[in-house]
Structure formats: C-alpha cells, structure tokens
Length: 72
Image: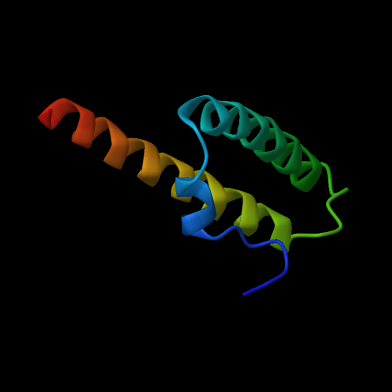
C-alpha cells in the first residue's frame, strides 16, 4: 500500500458529516484530475486511482451504515 492510502478502519471512525465533506472534496479532486489528464497536464497519474479507491471506501461505509439504520 502506498503512503496516500486510506484504511477502511479510519473511514469507519469518522462521522457521517465528515464522510460527506470528504466525499465532496474527493469528487472535486477527481474532476480536476480528469480535466488535467484530458489536457495533458497530469503529472501523478497514480493519484487518480487513489482518489477513486478512497471514494469507493467511503461509499461502502456509508452504504453499510444506511442498511444498518434501515434494519433498526
């Protein structure tokens, strides 16, 4: 794992509001990275993968929380 990798356990410790905020930041970064890639200005291509995986982890934890709340 790289130094930029976020662990799922760290994601689980955050509140829903913190996850929403981080998710919004990541979506903005993802958009900017796509734009840089399209214009040939992207230097660190691995960052695209890191951002995508972090978004997936947050979405997974949010989905688990939603399903747990729905059962109660």
